[in-house]
Image (cartoon, one colour):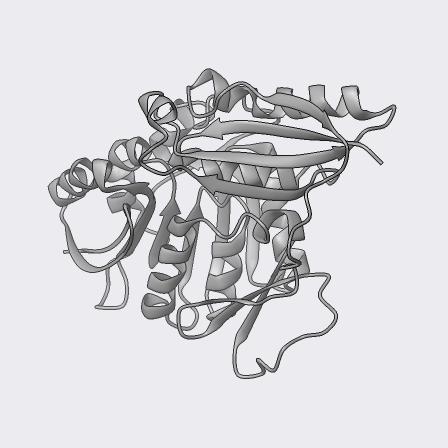
Length: 317
């Protein structure tokens, strides 16, 4: 049976967001991310680094669903983070090797699995994270997410109060909770809030994580960070020293704006508190993010890098 292939080009920063948004539709399948090589000059001139492909059944609902997806992704397109969505009717989906039940190991302790997997490998000594197939498999976890998980693994201690700012897919909130933290998962996008709540439920950590739609401090004055319109009641969380650790996997420019709020939101009592983990940006933003945080009294104590991606751990001095 024929199907519809949808495709769009993205910047590096937008890949994780596109996959999260597509996963929320529940009717896309086989999401793949193809990274460009240095020979793709035309795309690189437009700052595109990846092409994302995914598929819909070619049926009577196809045109309506394509329009829904286009509307969902339109904020990213308006802010020049993705190209225009294109759709093609093809005879059949390309054959791909089945990777959906292959575990993805991150750091020393975590393994990510398709939540529908039946034949589980022998990983009893690992901490398991379950995610939607369309979100975590085929596309692969975003490098910025992987780096943040590795840093969380090293810096969270039991019963920490943790803020996951820009929770997105919810995976970092799940990781923090499974490491023993009490987590506030915060995102100003309604779709991301739903995705986070889904991940929290799938991983049985509802008693450790509270999910709300909102922003930290002056973040509430910036609208939707991805360029869309906020929907519903968006809370503003006052930065009043409630958190031992903040993890923020968000755009580089947002980190620089929120630097004063990070400082005010952290509780500084000992060497294991006052910790900030930043990710979601590449080497081009590293200097500006670090400069903004050093100005606010932070020092760098740890880092992880993967290709051009950077994740840094800071301590409030």
